[in-house]
Image (cartoon, rainbow, N blue to C red; front, side, top):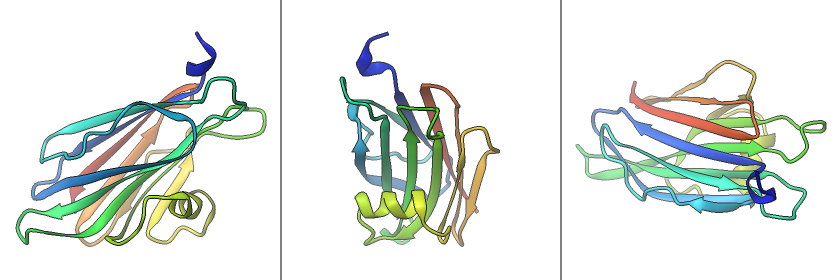
Length: 164
């Protein structure tokens, strides 16, 4: 195993909703790099993934957030944004693997601020947990999100989107 792939996170989004398309994928990395990119659009019954890994030679893991616009096929508009946060640290003696999911206003930017909110702030509009914890579930008025993440150096985070 090379230095660049010793910490990695595959992020998988699965769209099981009946009337939503996930559009305009955005990614913000606090640390790490893309190995493969997220698909820009996921229609009903589609799934897609991306792989992120630590930067070679850096004593940092792969840490970031992925967002999709929640496009309602009935109304032909996107009023909300869904987000998945992941943190696969370099040093497991100091840090844990974390993940989070939530629903935000459509104008929410996929950036360092969103990552910080999901990683460190009070849980409003989202939930977060450690890898060894239970599957996360977040419900808003329209959709239910679930997330799980494996507790290993090559973690896989799976986010499922369903109608409420």
